[in-house]
Length: 119
Length: 109
Image (cartoon, rainbow over all chains, first blue to last red; front, side, top):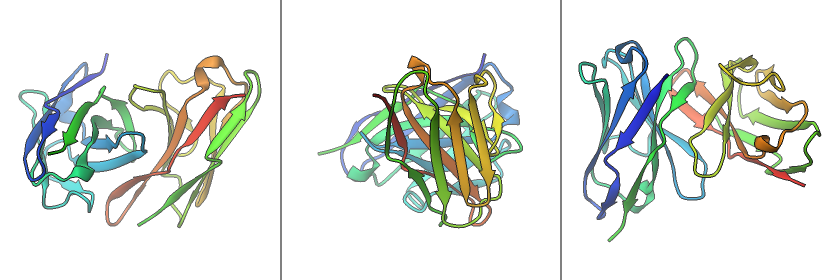
């Protein structure tokens, strides 16, 4: 069965950095695009970034462009999110999600990892 | 940026009743619309993709319809486990952005 397990969340000061990881299993990771989606406490869902199955195409929400970097290591079945210049408004649960091939949606999600930006 | 507006914000119904949730896009998204269910403390779950296709393992009581700017998620007969928050989501072609509606909370009356 498809599993996505995020890690790397925690408390970081404003201006700091953090790297999230998402380990995939139960499917051919190298064949799927992947996303990060976040949810601030008590709020709705916000798409953050996408990477194509082979890593050649990436896209970002305006709110994180220039500060966050998505990457992947298909040999390790792992997706990453490097977050720099963190702000209080980046505080959220971060989910990795698999791209539903041929559609524009997210078919499997991890359980999420909480990032708190606070001094 | 395409904005998705869901209505109502909260829907109070009883088990066994029919639920109708709406999602309106600020411009046409063709059929590139999905619906997700989220329960407290859990990740979202895909219910409907491409406006009307049920995702794997989703019960037949869930159905989606619409195209262009107006979409509907219908739950034909509510089960106790259906009370949750529901989000619609679309992807625009250019720039390639994915946006969600603000959510509809379906609560037990």
